[in-house]
Amino acid sequence: MIRIKLMSVMVDDQAKALDFYTRVLGFRTKHDLPLGEYRWLTVTNSDDPEGTELLLEPNSGIAEAAVFQKALYDAGIPIILFAADDLDAEYRRLKTLGAPLRGEPTRPESGPATLLVEDGCGNLVRLFQA
Image (tube, rainbow, N blue to C red; front, side):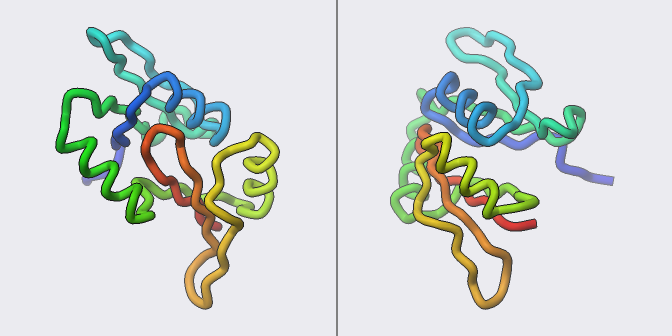
């Protein structure tokens, strides 16, 4: 059996990313280990600390990664999607926190309601109603 255990998102500032993914989105730090000038920095769901980890991976020194990240951002394409139990409640909570939202939740004719948020580290994150 193959399963998702760890995935990464490239960030341009690990400290800023950690603040966004924990304080704003509500994940919790799983690993924070020094690796030279960077860190092995992962977060998990607060209610499932042994579940899938998200690695906040620095894009410094990898020109291709930074170009790819910027191209997605400029095109309005999210780098990652997360499920929310109550998207409207999350929208209100994120707005109160001053999170950089890209509008209000959208409700397409088919598919779940979604909300686009900037992580402040060069990425767009899409939340969707689960």
